[in-house]
Image (cartoon, rainbow, N blue to C red; front, side, top):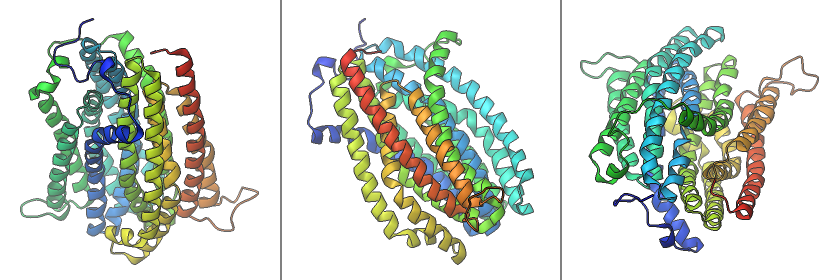
Length: 474
């Protein structure tokens, strides 16, 4: 098969054998625009929480509950749609550029269906607030936030297809530019609607929902327009012709993406459900948990961005029929992720109190948040390592085993142990004298993340060895 004249990669014979320093430079060149884009995306949630916190403690608690459900849904969607990235990367590595447009078109059909289903599920999920012991205003803000923002989910799912397509072509700067633009727009609209500046009504926490809804659609539409105009995408442009759904390709995308979606759900639900489980302890615990989760999510974007770049590097090597280069790139990325975990753990532990005060003026909330941030510092090593390792494994198109490991770690260890330590239910024969609240759940997260990191490390070693023995590109 002859590749188009304008190709995103050099031919396989031109791919150099690199040393560690050169590979780190190549990985970082791909990762840093992803990082800025990811930070901008998470920055929208940071802005939501920070502005709601300065509106009122009840607005902050309501947004915290709403964001907990929103994060579970969108991160699960990210996983479900991630199947596009390794498949495009393999085609690019194999110089099969004519296969890319068909794959992306089918990915968009998948995204449309999944996004609409997610929108309905998000709206139904608001019923959970009716069964929680929370203040009326907190209930109103949380419910309204989820209902409004649910209409962004179809656009978000389609955006993630374009995201995987662009990253696998080594085009990460457009992702960065559009995400930063969306963040700036989010800050302005939040300020106008949360506090009611000028002719705009004061909506409090619900203003955050309207701002995020607008910015998600802006991000999707802006990236699509960029791709249509940029010459880099011309040889693989997916939308030059109409194509209906192809069941076989959709099934292949679903088989690869479903385990990743479950994996992402397992992890994010372990974090997100904590806010729901500790709601009975009051707004202070919920708000402190959301502050700690928000900041750790921001830090997490660095190893996550490294992982997305690593998936592309590994997938392209395998597509080019070079399992030796794939293994080398995988382990370089893992070492880099672990090194970052060391640095972030030290910084987070040292600055826990200062970080908490950036989010709130409430001394009681800040004190609890600082305690949770110190626990978050403890799991930085395992959290950074596990996300990079799992991304490397996905570059091999292996998704089911990581799913099992994550389900075991978070639903087998973190959530049960968290319920014991955090809630101390009376029916248990062994339990703490008093529930530890959010702290108990975060201690359990340390255990779960450590289990995940160790299990994935063993799996990566097995996968890389097996591919070297078979020499297969499948």
